[in-house]
Each structure stands twice: as structure tokens, then as C-alpha cells.
Length: 271
Image (cartoon, rainbow, N blue to C red; front, side):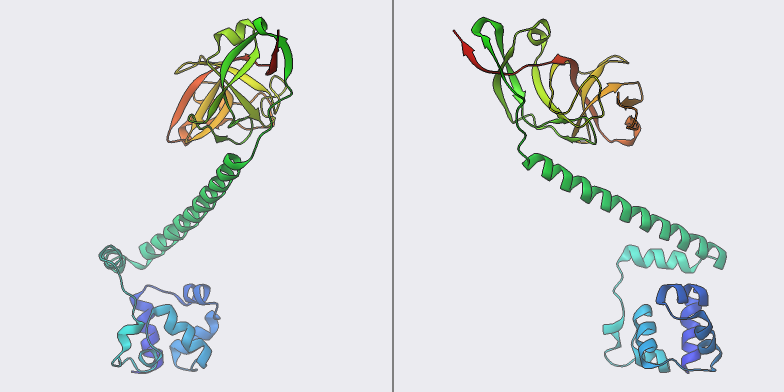
């Protein structure tokens, strides 16, 4: 069997056009046409490219005959991969093209998701290891302060950051009606909730499993904490430069509580 016949059979078996093979290998489709017609033979470099593409040896590509160790060149397919290949080979040329185009689209989407997850993981690590300075603290008499749980992991007023419920400390804040109602305090970063809340503010939060539409709360979406305004099917920012977060795009969405004010931290008590 000559090279031209072997190439034609391989292309037919895999549902490949000259254009598709050219796109995948970088070899001119015009040159592939010459090979199929038997008018020319590929050089050594192109032989290796074609053999590697089909997962066969150069000897088999040139003669159609397998050598003793030819199996070393053949790819090992899982049962699932073999089933998919069998289904693919039963399709018409039109359906094969549709499947190939769909598979290419899915592969691109998978690559984008992997890149997004890697970026998100890196941002989470950086956020969890970064040391945030507490806001400037003020001095008040002892009867003007109150103790509260303070989480040093910030809630994002931007793209989101992780809120770890196991890392907090007791701090003292100025006593106010809002402070007396609050269950915990948490700093925020980012500017998506301006002008009401600024990066570095410490907000007072009343624990509750949900908030009403129009109220501002602390929400955990797929592990990331946000301070946002609840709007039914989405969370919105007060800063119009930020797009809403559609709740349907997240696997988990939990409300930690309603934001009821801004705290003032106390450095020490005065007698």
C-alpha cells in the first residue's frame, strides 16, 4: 500500500477533510491534496507530523504495514473514549463536522473555566494571606464602648473575598444603638458600595438568614463574601460602575446578616 492510499484511508476513517487536517497540523491543504493524489511525497519533517497526528509509526504511514513494535506508536484509549470514537464513526460527514465544531467550542469553554478558577484560587490565597490594617481607633470612656466579634478577613465591596468564620477576635467599638444590635463586625475592601461604604470601613452586621429587597447584607457566594444590596434574583452595588451579581450563576448563596451601620474601633478605655 502506498503513502497516498494510507493517507486517504486514515482521513476517511477519521472524517477529516484536507482543510481540517491542514488546520490541525499547519501543513498547507494544497500540499495535502498533492499527497492524496500521489503527485508528491512529504519530506521527513512532514512525515513525522502526520504520523504523530494519527498516532502511528512512519513505517505504517509509508507502507500500511505494522512493524513489530508499532503498538508503541498507537494511542491507548479508555473505554469511554473508544465508545465515543465508535459513535463518531457511525455519523454522517455533516454530523461529524457538527460534533467536531461542538467539541472545539466545549474545549474552549473548559479552558476558560479552568483559567477563571485558577485566577479565583490565586486571588483567594492572596486575600487570605494579606494583612489588613485595622482602621484608625479612637479613645472613649469605658462606659461608651462595647465588645464585639471582629472578623479580620474582609468582605469585598468589589470582586469578592473569602470570609473565614473561624478567625475572629474580640474588639471594642464605640457604643451606639446600632452597635448594641450588631452580632459581629467586619472590614470591607473595594469601592463598589460607595458612597455609603468605603474601603477600610468596619461594618456592623445583624445575623439573619435573609434580608428584604433593598436592604444591604453580607452574602457568601461559592465561598466568597460580598457586601451588596439584595434585589431578588441578584445582588447589586451602589456604585453603578459595577455590574450586578446574578444569583443563578452561583452554586451556593448564603446570607450571613444585614448591615446596620459602621463601627468605630476603640484603642483602649479611659477611666
